[in-house]
Every structure is written in structure tokens, then in C-alpha cells.
Image 1 (spheres, rainbow, N blue to C red):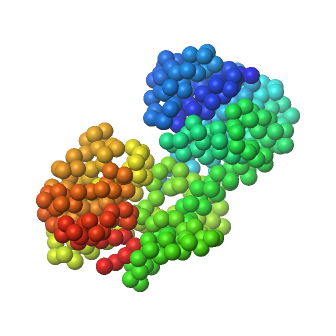
Image 2 (cartoon, rainbow, N blue to C red):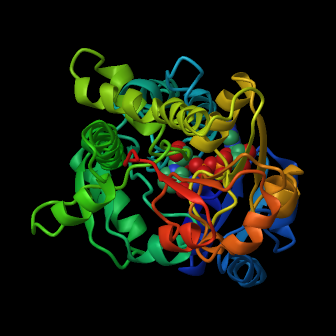
Image 3 (cartoon, rainbow, N blue to C red):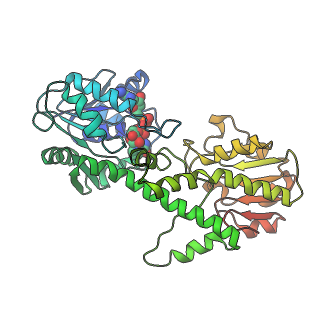
Length: 419
Ligand SMILES: NC(=O)c1ccc[n+]([C@@H]2O[C@H](COP(=O)([O-])OP(=O)(O)OC[C@H]3O[C@@H](n4cnc5c(N)ncnc54)[C@H](O)[C@@H]3O)[C@@H](O)[C@H]2O)c1
């Protein structure tokens, strides 16, 4: 069986390799020549645990090659980006153009699968008409559907194989054919359904997490008003066997949780009220956190152009991914308010030209923990105290030892508890 995978990024590349490793003849298609050249040389341009070695072996086996031009195949998987526009509407240009490419080579008996995270109706309202413009009829002449990807970067090769999967077809036969295709390497369960359910399934999973985090962030604000420690509150609540409140913080980032709920809001703006409010609640957190910073500085009599040192700028701990990072927005807000901001990050500092940890904190009026990178767990507060101007520390993640900070003479402040 010959399979064409369109889009060789974080999702398409490892997926191609999995199918090739399972014995299919796989052709990866990407518009970027550098990605295609690298793959044909058995190399990868993205960082992912175990991927470079896996790709090298699979390419050497002759089952996987890459090209910039789509080719006829028995099955097509589309794994191109689906970002949001500045107005929070979905940007489906890449899915549209990839589908148009598939239409140029589509023939009777083929299978077309969308993997990209997409608004409900993408398969039947955007892709189906393009594919049927060939004169072929969906269902009768070719199978079509959606199988969303739910892997986590950093553990993609394991999760691709072991996660459960959804196979959503425009009809039962399409769902059967999608499930059979993925069965070639997936060890998890494959749940068959229709394409629209599969689309909303992926969006609902990430939205569940976004709404839960918004609830935690709202609790953080309530706790600050009511003189309660939100972290202690959530820890105790979560001892209940049926409660699982997520963690608050300075906002939600990344290209999935901060993006996917908007696809639901765009489609059903009148109905998706909790979802919309949650997005706004989470998006309010960088501004709210900036307000706490202003309050801490003023409360300590520090007026004017204070220096704020921010530790960590990625969207989550222990990764080098800055997409939609709320800490970057926090920094922009602080700069806009006239503060001098110096940020350091062990994962992206060199790449982004950030100052070193020492340079960032030297002369700081306030040190803010933005991201709970493992390196920051054991901060040497004695050494830090010698570099800063004022011994003030604001922990937005409940990650740092208050005791260690206070022992070194720091005043310790925590998001979600007002002192
Ligand atoms: N990365 C993740 O962790 C993750 C997890 C689950 C779902 N997803 C979803 O998977 C989809 C792909 O994400 P990604 O992270 O792999 O994106 P990516 O940006 O890493 O890769 C996409 C690739 O598609 C290529 N491309 C774009 N348009 C093309 C076209 N018309 N023809 C050929 N190639 C084209 C780009 O050059 C790029 O190399 C998105 O919908 C994303 O939301 C991503």
C-alpha cells in the first residue's frame, strides 16, 4: 500500500515514519525544500526524543522518502498547520491547499484522512466539495474522514503507538478503512465514529483542560480576595475521589490548548459561553499577574522604572517552545508600563539572545518566577540575594521553597495568595 503524508512537521514526520516502519510505502510531502532534503538524507530538523535515530533507520530501509510534489497513492494523510488568525478565527488555508493538491491525483478507491486539529465541519464542508470537484463521489468512489492527533511533544513516538485513537468517517466504510490503516502500528484502542464527532472530540479534549485551568485561575483570584491560599485549597479539594482541579498560573500557552477552544467558539458563538469565557479568563492572567507585580513593587515603596527579572519565558516547563507563551505577554505588558524587564531561560536563552541568569537578576528590584523549569527548583537564594537590589521574589507557579527564600532574607509573594 502506498501512503502520502502531507505536512512533515511535529505530527506528519513521526507518523510517516511509523507507517513506513510498519511496512507501507510512504511518501512524505512538504512545501519546504529543506525538510524534504533533510528527510531524504535520513535527517530531521525538529527536536523530538528518539526521532532522529528512528528516521535514519526507516529511510535506510527504503520505505520512506520525501518530495515537494504530491504523488498518486492509495491513501493520503493531511497533517498541516491549523493556526488561528489575530481575530481568533481559524486559518484553514493549509488544509484547503493540501486538499486541493490531493484532488489533483485522487482516483477511485483512495482514502483521504485529515489529522490536523480542525473546526467541526472541515471534512464535510471544506474538504469534501474540493475532492468531489474531481467528479469522484465521496463514499461511493473514495473514503474520507478525520483521525485527530493527540500526542504530546517529547513523547510522540511512544504515544503515537500507545494512545487510543478516533477514526471518524463520512460513512461507516470510511471509518472502517481509517481504523484499518492506523491498526498497522497503533496498539491503543481505535474508536470508530463519524467525522464531525471526531472533529469535536479533539477540540473538546483540549477545551476541557482550558476550562478547568480557567476555573483554577478564577479560584486564584477569589482566593487572593478572600485571603486563602489557592494552591492549598486545590490540593485539599483534589483529595476528593471525583475532583480534579487543574493548576492556576500566569496564563495558558502553546499551540493547542490556547487555540483549539476558539474553533468551537467561532462555530457556535451563542452556545459556547463557558468556553468563550474560559478563554478570556485565561487570557486575562498575564495582565492580572502584571497587576500583582505592580502591587508588590508599590507595596515595598519602589516607584518609577523598577527592574523586574523574569525567570522562564516558554509556554510550559522544561521545553524550548515559546508559542503563545503567556509569560512573553506578561513581559510586554510590564515593558508597556515602563518597567525595565530582563528575562532569562535555560532552554531558549542562547537561541533568543537573552541575558544570562546572573545578568538578568543583577540589580533587580523584583525577581519573578515565570516558568517552573526544573533548574529553578533549587535556586540558591543566598547567591541571588547578593546580586539583586531588593530581596523580593514573586512565584507565579507555587514552585519555589518559601522557607529557603525567607531564610535568605527575601520577601516571598505567591500568585493565588495575597500577603
Ligand atoms: N505538534 C503537536 O504537538 C500537535 C499535537 C496534536 C495535534 N497537532 C495538530 O497537527 C497539525 C500539524 O501540526 P504540526 O505541529 O505537525 O505542524 P508543523 O508546523 O510542525 O508542521 C506542518 C508542516 O506542514 C507543511 N505544510 C503546510 N502546508 C502544506 C501544504 N499545503 N503541503 C505540504 N506541506 C505543507 C509545513 O511546511 C510544515 O512543515 C495541526 O493541526 C496541529 O494543531 C499538533
